[in-house]
Length: 617
Image (cartoon, rainbow, N blue to C red; front, side):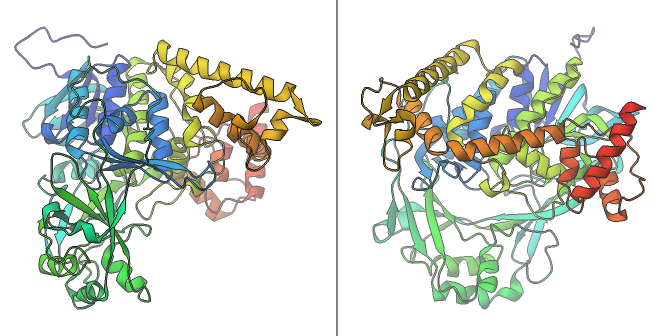
């Protein structure tokens, strides 16, 4: 650990870990590093904007909810913070199988941001400093310091950069554009240039956007379709909130409904009449946006046959009257935005409190990272969040947690970095995709991206990962004891079901019958609702999960073949396309090499032969 400067009049400028950026990735990274004993500095542009929900005030959703529960099981903060700020909890896809069910919470954005700010400020060993980072200093193959706009030079053993959409960013309101990392905050222009010049990183350009916000008192909510929360909200965290922070609204905030309306022919016409004023269609925006979450003008052009589109009105919290219009993101001029919004049923008199806009920003092409999220060229520099080409609070937080853990380990000299496999966690799926796939648009997790999604369910994240979180040092012994109690109950329940028989069948087989529930079994011992849920899932999906476990074992065998960083891919029989892609990405294992687009199974076998020869030599 570093020691204090002899001159105590000077600011403390030597840290174990410096984190640049105070969004969802930066907060998780800083908390993880500090909780692991690293003296950590969190640099942020605005101390009051830590963990700000810049876009939708919601956490979770398809695959994203799984990530939040994984963050919680590993010892991160997002699940606890979401539960404290939740104003509507819903389990999505409840009528479908457990592999695709995902929790989602609408949050009070003020409570979410203020609680996380308080957690960060009270964390021992973590220091927050408001300043803009403008330049990296390097020596040899290591980043040595970060320089701020005030001329402060903060040295560290490891760095995490989690700058979100701020690098070289531009805001677009119609054909008017100006620098900005988000509405009300400046862009990190100098730091983007330092990434190119001082770090020599390959950069890309992406685009995202946000819809208008409107005042609730100007809406006719009674005419809209109402969407209520689940009657018994479950929450995200498997753990107890021991933060002792003041709660706003008691133990849980009152739940609130959302509402749904639809666009009309007049909405579509307002878009068509003004396409030439759109920065997307005039060529002003160069960055690539996400296909899965297009701007509203994209929807009108690409789905011209659709008569209407769903738009959700989501409350932003108890301490504001603003509603977020989910589904009508746009970068059209502000006069068009008024016309669009007031063409929506129930919003004929709506007052826009904040205009929609698009944002273009620089990102680092993630093929330059390894699966620890370290930059291969700068092994003590870790990147997390939208700088890696992802989208979403949850994807950012998952990367931030892993980057913070590995930065703390690097700073303390621990050689073994944390790498999550595709069969362990959705976080592992995401990071593996980032370093092996071509990222040409903002990356978003879906359940379909995971080969083993029956194993990676939202309901079993603690059973999968909490012991690992304890080994890392972020999960307490008392939390592991609670996990042990669940595991013991499950073991006892399995033993009973497999030993007892009814009409020639074990109760385990009986429980597998469609429509049968644990409570219907004769003599079944009393178990917690959580244990019963797990046993029912295990029996119903036993054959499928066994198959996925076998497939995952095959993956682990390929992952055991390590590819040295200096491996020579100039191999006879390896096609030029495959050689160039392998040299560009430098996969760490044969399993990772096999997932690179354009590398065939035959070429993996060829690499395996050469690795075996190298081992014998």
